[in-house]
Image (tube, rainbow, N blue to C red; front, side):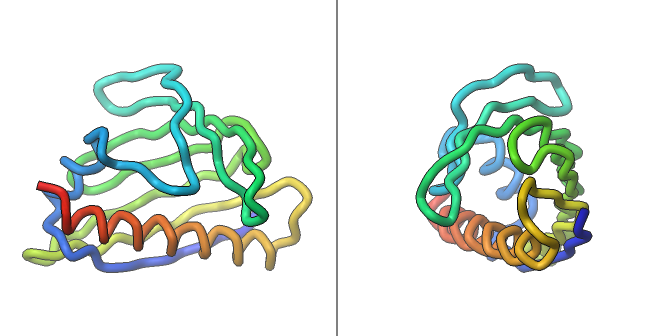
Length: 138
């Protein structure tokens, strides 16, 4: 298990980020929702098709617990990263929002350095997609 912490600043207020997270327009090029297993007032469990760095895909299930406007907790329930757990913490900064992602990550068949490289790469891609999409989101 590898502990990873990463952070960035969104060019959007925290209220807009939460509207975007809960909107159908919230999507990512490497993560496609294929089904919803369960949905409650506090979160949902999703089936996902996740793109690997080589372009192939694999299936995962994620349980996401929402605590707006401060945080979101994600646990990977199945797939090669089963057992990974991380929290997104949001801190308002006026018209911007700081996000810190911190957690423990595992991946079948990968050493710690490879896990860290892949997770940080995915976090950077997702952050950049979200930040760009937030500029267009009303």
